Length: 390
Image (tube, rainbow, N blue to C red; front, side, top):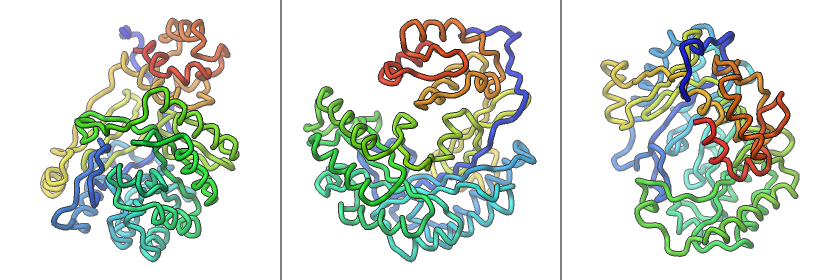
């Protein structure tokens, strides 16, 4: 979308700020995973990596001086392979460097295969308020097909234990798995719901490039029509259980939304530290994206010598901002106030007037001019809706 110099982004106020921390190691690389993750082969120097993270954060401070941090997300990889002591050191260091809000949501991803009750209590004592557990399925055969290191019983035990330790718990589920029927997918959802968990993320298994499944997909993947039947059954089961489908893949009960991801979807800012982490930082001069060196060895070497060598920064062009904003905001079922577009991009809503008109005429976008909200058709054909803003 060509924009003239008249449309140089001008932010009147800065958006909320989050912190993303990447711990890239896992016990075993899953064949469907395209995240920056590395199998542990000869142990990990936790202390050295935590120090690298804090060094990284310290060098980022000039870009966010004075700004409060609303949420922290420790992702991976499998962050729960780290000890509770390492996570405590990390969070203490973050608190010393940043103005962390007293009610900050602090989420950590965990694998049921790394579950130890006392270790998880240690994570909570360190300050983790929300545990996101990569269940994927409660069916041991399906988990084996996905290359997961845990079984169904371990997944259930991890969720039930976490609910007694953490104020909030999310269970990640996958559907349209190899050989999966509608009944099996529904049984996974019903098992998760029965635990009492109040946030469930439900993802369609996809064959990502540069993954083992991407190179050689399982032979018994559900056909497209069957996968759609599974998806509709999964969504219907969650809605019937009282969950709100508030984002493309996210379901919450009792208002327990994931605040960190909501900040992403509302085009908020986030500092990204750790190997391969990405960030988005706004200033009155515009919006900047950051990336870190992907390989842990390269990242560690830079943080121990020249930290700036591990970081790339680039200004987001004005013409790219409408698509970037919509790619996030239109994932939300209720959308966002129309005024948020100008507030978060620094551009007038008029620059996307033609695309909005086209989307509305095709019944992909709600006709209410005060909100940017996809219709049911727009949610189903989200890629077509987003393409209008390219």
